[in-house]
Length: 323
Image (tube, rainbow, N blue to C red):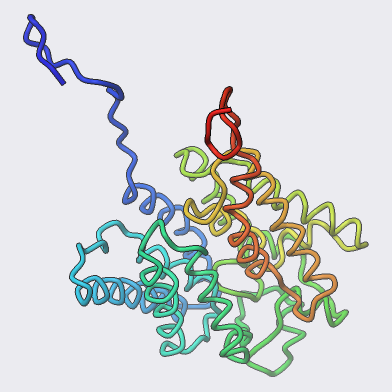
């Protein structure tokens, strides 16, 4: 940098200051998830809000404590820990015990995120890994779905006198009567708190697109492949899109900056892979749902997808050396 004769400061590019930082991105995603949280509170009651607050608080505390113990700069202000807690909460049933939720928060923040070096260094989405760990370790609690009076009559009827019921995917697996498409669109069905309302998730996704926090490639390719394979397997494509965690996963979890590809071609491959694995698990696997497992697998493949799809520069080979 040098000063010219007119007194102006002359420096090298770039000269444009970008106001987008980690905190603003995390804040936008949190805002985008508010409609889904509101619907979950409406359908499941204030237990949903309490569980969400516990998750968010635990994630923030675990991040603060780890940074304090390791004598590192505090990072709770970037809101990434709060967002992890919110997403993990929305992947739980409203009846999930608080102490089990805190175990999941520890796995997400300490084991998956911080032990790998913190934000930007984790190999997989912390909320995804924690959800799978909770599902494996506390399978009964993770599939204990609360039935409320706000739900579709088919859900209530299937539960009978029980306080718990089945998700649309579980009803499909049993060959039972399914809730209406409108119920799944609006969110008056059973399932994890944040995955029940398609309209709430779509509103959040549109907000993120407008704010340019995410791009269209991953959500569109994810959902499109789910629809194509659902039709190929003789299922109802609209049902497979609206039921379970496809919308939540495609819009909010598969699009994680750290664990998804960088360029558009890679994002299309990544989203398509998530959709394909989801439907393969739904159709042939032991579990009625496969979104979390699909995203985790594709997270592992992300570095390879980036290598396969990165732009080639003239005079430079694939390894970055001169030809």
